Image (cartoon, rainbow, N blue to C red; front, side, top):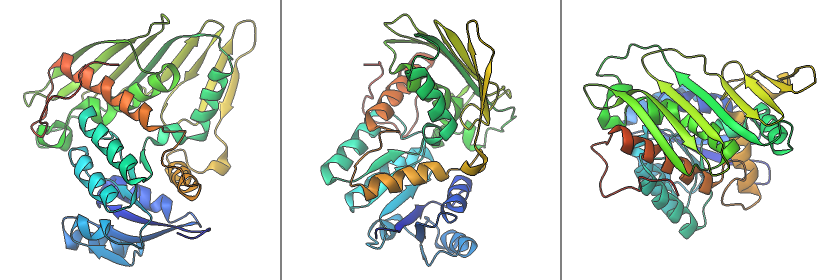
Length: 340
């Protein structure tokens, strides 16, 4: 790493890896120097597509590449613990896709490993780095709508997804909750923190993954969070934050919004829109910029996506899965199933 350039490695070659890399190579202070996959052919194809100098057919070769400052882990989430752990132990900084891991036990292991080796680690919760979401949080924190009373958020895809699809495959951590529900839960906890109680219901598939899940998050303050996710129905992907003095609505795409509306008692509604200079609304450049800022500053975690917050979200996801009866084949031991 130089004062101007942060060198990246990409671990995995799927769709999300391609989308992130496309955004990354547009940043003048980022350089993608290597990519790895379990398949050397896949790594070479990806490298050719993006003009990446080195392609590895195994993860360890990437982890051991000392020309790499940060590794972006984009494997299926069942492999996040192994992939990110390998890179952290080898001395790389890591940006790991959401959901951070399969359960909170694995998440705690990664956080402990990062802290042991003094390496930067962040969940790729790009929503938290989005400029408009940050503006919304700042308004809420400044008391624009008073004390928060409730948060509502939903994320659903219409499907239908066949049993062979990764979203239905328990071997790949399938189901609506971990892949989609992590966004509504993370949005609620961005504004309210970790709940004191969770009540959840779900509709399960024959493979025993959740087709749709709803949960109520309860807080000692009296606030409630209402979250829903689905892989059997396309939802509005909307969100609303209601306070004692007003409300903020995100009509659609709450995790990468182009606008939100602030309603305050006795005032005209105010619309806040995304700045075109921030790039396309689906850009992942902001999380990459935050990683590079933090790494250059010598920080081991981001204040925008703190590790304790990631662990809190994982505890909530575990609690929901415990209540609805979803457990994955790769899980061993006894993960924490209740919120702190």
